[in-house]
Image (cartoon, rainbow, N blue to C red; front, side):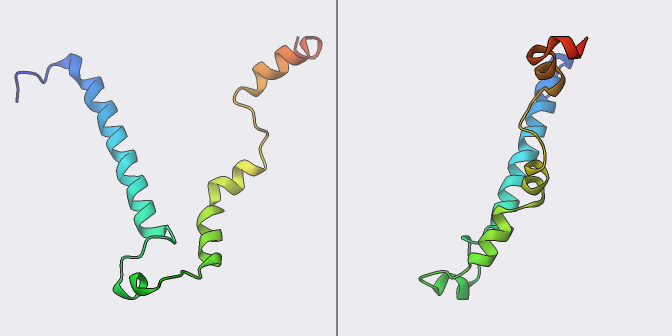
Length: 89
């Protein structure tokens, strides 16, 4: 294992660790919180799921509520600079 673990590989290992963490977080969130995923036997027996409230809670999470109050801009200062150069100087 020590043959390919050289300092040049460390950024790649770091990036892969971050991506792996994101995958684990996403899978964990979907398995534990998604209203369409039923792990228990009683939940799997239901043919039609009547869980509109649970689905609403899942879809309207805290990040989405926060971003709804923000303007849809990636770089607001750059947008203001190019949209109105007189005010930005």
